[in-house]
Length: 109
Image 1 (cartoon, rainbow, N blue to C red):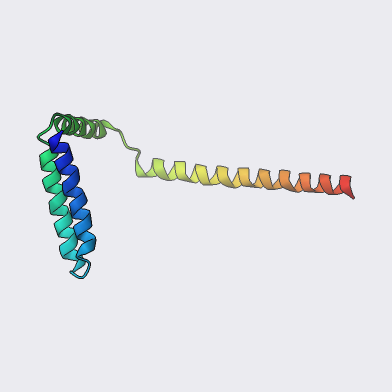
Image 2: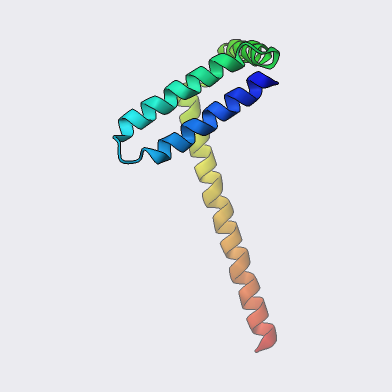
């Protein structure tokens, strides 16, 4: 629990320091913040939760490698089909709206 609190305090102090030293170059402040986050993650990696998170990330990476991604032509065909359906549905909704407007105008006039 101490390591969790230490990591949280370290990152919080890094965020506070980032804004306190606003007169310094943003590059230095960002590099300092990256260093603080790396140190906090290193501390977290020594805990059981950190180890479980690391194993989960590795397994997720392996699963992403197994994914069969669509080809460029498949992606283009699917995108064009979606655009066509959006246009068709938009036209149908416009016709329905026009008909309903006409019907209500006829009933109320």
